[in-house]
Length: 188
Image 1: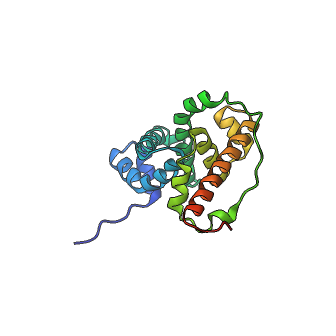
Image 2: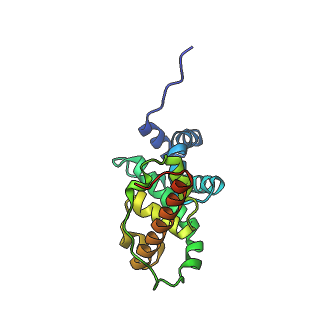
Image 3: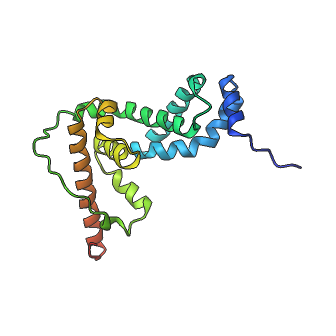
């Protein structure tokens, strides 16, 4: 018996554009892990991340005809997942938007403190951040958006994005310091 043939990405996409549910399922299965990895950076728990992924795939399938096959599919899907996660967080962010920003402090980045940590440790620490800080930290540090772009996406001033990023980094540094002290290791 022959192993099942792997369907090319282009063929999957063309069949999805024609509305084939079978190929939509195959595309979903192929890119689920990729989308989930992105979603987990923005969501506080796995259930929320799964909802974001499912919503993102529905949006992707509904707008598949607008996808330009000359461009990388993963980049297009990533944008949809990120935007879906942000849409989900937007109402929480609006509630936190009125925080007093006058007492913000600019802190430098302490990279050496995280050298000994595993990716899972860092992700766990990120999950302790308040939702707006997690979202802005992920957009800026992981996905490479600048503060003007983040401001446009979240409908906040770029200066607020800078403050929330600074607070996220400050909280992460504090958690890392406490973790290293708990294990008796000196900071780098």
